[in-house]
Figure 1 (cartoon, rainbow, N blue to C red):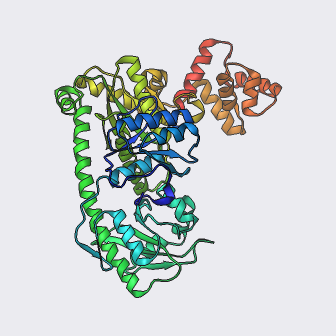
Figure 2 (figure 1 turned 180 degrees about the vertical axis):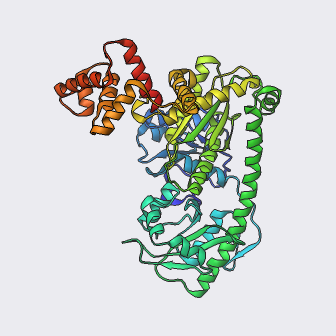
Figure 3 (figure 1 turned 90 degrees about the horizontal axis):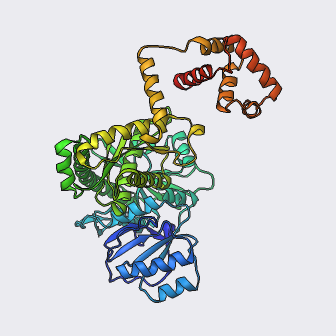
Length: 527
């Protein structure tokens, strides 16, 4: 509570015992209930009804959990009150706009803080944990503080944000500067001003209705790391400016230390995942080290569809956040799983409880739920590899996962099935995979559309027509003229006339099933 503050969490019931120690953070999943250890804080992402919550409180209390977090508005009722009266669990409410994964990440990081050093900040001793630094700086400046990285992602904030404005509250809820705020920062060149100045920068004329800000760069030598932002009532005194500069130096040192630790952990994860994905005897040895040598296993491949022209640094930062989020997400529901970012694809190796079809469904569910909960600027997709009985065959599973990812990431949204629109196993998208391979082969041989399809395209180009769109709509509607006419927004009689002209221009007979198949295949392959 001291770290996350009232912006994200509020105590709704029960009485926290400061003498009890939090040992872990568990993300609850009703379909696959995780193990709840004594001292756990449970994030009840799937709990809604009074009956579910009351039963969960009793269950968590028996396991020794000390707190339950529920989405606001937190339900009230006799069943919940009776359950709380019988236990010592405290119930907290999570703000409606907040992300479960963000909060889980913050809580998990709070459990692994660095031991305090004897560093001075404004005349006070403080630890090297960024949240502690933000709180100390708030005391010094008498202003709510956030510490942000180069992509304006919030990495720590002071617990007291009561004196801030709506823009700051939205920033903390999303753990990222909102789109409109970021656009104004770019428009006015604020980040450039901040990073070019060796003194705090006072900003009071950018956002209409917003409170003034003071920001100071965080820098390690010549390398920019981010900025400290404070919501203020007016310009800072010289003493407070100097305190903010000294704080930025301490924060830079802490960020570098955290990076070293994160880099070491990431390199270890990367080595394990690479060893597993290669398959063979080394994969079996690594699987035994991770205690799943005898389990069915499969590979998940996750990737984003990146918007053209997107800043590469923003994309990379988003990929790293997603990789960290996946590792944290898997920890309570699949503790033996491991994940790492390789290039632009995030791979996870999942030990499963069942083989074949049940294992595949379990892997699809895990990927589906993660993507649904993920808060990212880019849409993410996942391919599920073949479930194999032994880690030596993981290279085969990875190949299938890559192929399935390519299919779901590249097909148009309107052609995705309603179920698992962003997740698929290769055996469920075999035909689309084959079409992509055919398209690859034709591209390698520099083949272009010929025959009837070429004639229709040339006609459309020369006369400004829509023969190709007409053909596609008719084929997609399986010959239903009424439905196809609605798709291209013309009267059905007009559509029938176009079909007749189409047959004349292309020299084809659409009643011939071989012609229909050929044209449909060409449309899919060349698009």
